Length: 446
Image 1 (tube, rainbow, N blue to C red):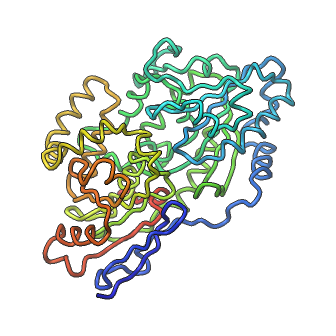
Image 2 (cartoon, helix red, strand yellow):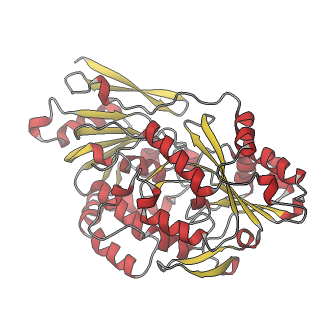
Image 3 (cartoon, rainbow, N blue to C red):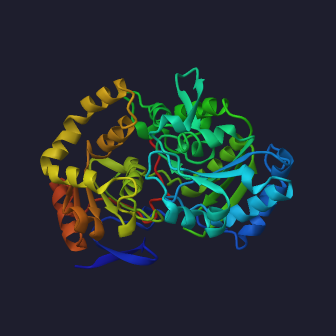
């Protein structure tokens, strides 16, 4: 049988995705992001952004000798050039009179795993990790947070104390598509990145109306996004913030760096991200294949890539995840014990997710649990389609099932099972769309 081969990025190499030629995969159905125009000189790019900030004085003009500065960076699951940015930012702060003892660096981990000493050094570089007070905020320890009050939306504003006590907060992150916030980055490094779990949960419940599709917020403008509006209100409880944000492709690929007022920087980079990463309109497909590149293999982030392309699939279709997975990243945001528990549930667990999750979600929402949004996303991914994943390391770790999701370590077996899962009338000539770099691209709801 003749096949068509599609190259999918695969951990620094390429996975050759071979599909039967009679499957309808036109040249326009392999959707790539716009990766043109990456900077060849990141230090110069960042310096230019810091010299001409958006809607803000220069960073050096916001501080003086004795100023306390809290730098907040995004967590290791992102590939923001933090190690490269920090020396440039710190040099400017010190030139303005800020002492090393007045600088803290916090990693905005949110609900992800805490960053240990080794991970902190990898993220920040040995010099900053040794010289400055560095923190991975303990999300469940209320004594580490200051309670600043409650927003008009009822969001408790509980922020990590070193961030609250600073005179200026410097946010170093990137803008990527986000299922609930439209796009990540900006104030999200603090809300929820360095916020207590109660704040995190309240923020993630914004926009999750019981009967609404959570994916409707993906890639939308901040002004229309309930979570973004809630984050902006919470940020009003803090003092001055200065954003240094990036538009990135693969690790080491920076298209743009902007600095200045967080809202202005966020909106400008979100507009460009939309132009580069949003898939063109197309009819829904029977089979949708999504690579997780450039995510490093964290299963939770990889499954989010599937959610970012959910609207590309017809109800009753098949969504296939192509998850390159670094074994060291498997447990980053989904502990092995939890994965084994879900995997061990097998097909009954799949039935429970499809049928019982709505009830569990309502209970968790009533209890103000931060887990409610994860249950919503799990249900929306599998409720009306079949989901399969090719990931040999994940298969080795937990076996062939993760609840309703089938996991494969062999591509031929995967495609045989995909064909069988399709309606009989569509098995020989299904319409297919492929998103090789699904960690960047996304498909908005129509």
